Length: 93
Image 1 (tube, rainbow, N blue to C red):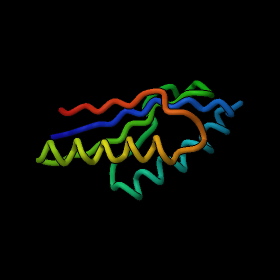
Image 2 (image 1 turned 90 degrees about the vertical axis):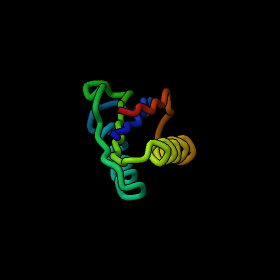
Image 3 (image 1 turned 60 degrees about the horizontal axis):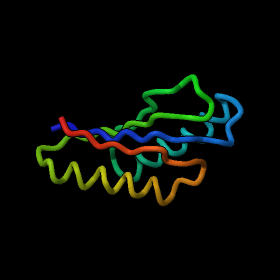
């Protein structure tokens, strides 16, 4: 099974794409390192104040996928201070 977590972020302090990258890259690196997931910015790349980050995992157990992605979502909401989480969405394929 494949599961994804889509995180829609609002970055109010960004006035350029360079500033946005400076805030998003550390988050992507941390999620990859801490949770061992594939992570990429998958949308809104041309907007300064918003980003879509997608985390992806593969496992044979749906429950493990769901729990792991919920843990990532909870961590982002509780620990990411550079902006606001607009929406979180978990999908299983």
